[in-house]
Image (cartoon, rainbow over all chains, first blue to last red; front, top):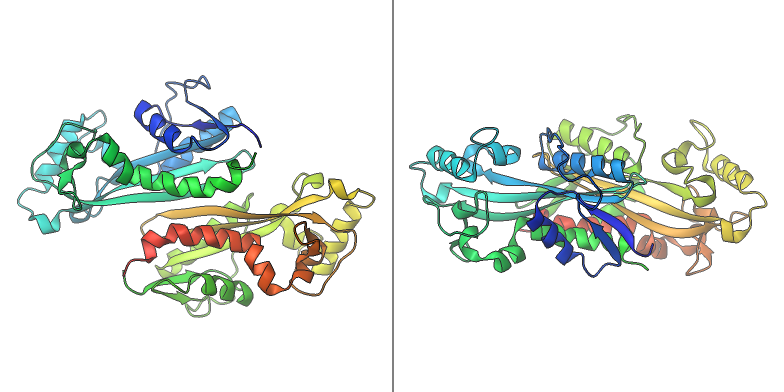
Length: 203
Length: 203
């Protein structure tokens, strides 16, 4: 299976680059949504789990293109909020909420909650769907604590509130390189790489 | 998560032992279907892929028990038969077909087909379903060739017809120990072990 084509089902340029970087050792040709003429395609992510949403995205694009497709779905789970916002992370404060609105809602819900009760984790479910029906589904997680004020200017989403205990810095303070080493998405991709080895690694 | 309970959703004692052996380094308590009072439970495996069937089994048992559940679904894909018998491997020659009947049907369908066109693979899809909705799905494969006559007395199913090119012996000739090192199930379990490391490995 030399130079198999793999589509990365994301409209996010940053995610695409991150995934490309990690898969660059495989003898595969990576295509973006734009490359396969599906840029801007609206996919309704109505799954109740991250895994469901990743599979929905990957399956639709695999069916439209006939190529192996990899998709992910990510979000924040906060222990005190019974794992909310979860799959609603991007629209926590409403359908077209900004990062700032989502962050403000989260801070409000955790107002006066002490640090030891602000445990959270970033979750990334990742799915690879193959034309023969084979699927790989897995998850990467990054544990952390929700800060009481936003810190840092990097990243996006809840990054300014998400403290990585090991560094005592938020994702927004850590810098892209360090974040990409330890993030939920990096951890999911590392595992995906191991599982793709057999499938895509042989020339 | 010390001594988390994990159910292995199989009625097959041999599979249970194989999985137990590979997961023995984890600080988990493995339960069989019998242990959770579900021995003999009939699950309708009506998925169109191995992955679907593995997930169906694991999800039903997880929902009934509340414990993390691992299930697998395995079968034989023959290139010349467009990947049949596939999910119908156990009932290829009919609903309650014996191994011998299935083997005979396969040999008949491949009658006069030369060795170079008898390529096949054993496939094992494995699913772990967690109470929080998380799922891990992956596949192990073992490539081989379908022999023209059955050879060997070990194993079960299509093992006497399945030649592993590396050894020029069928699965039924190889012996359980060697088979368990290179089989589709062993390969799936190896990957599953890597993915479970984060989830079950920490005390």
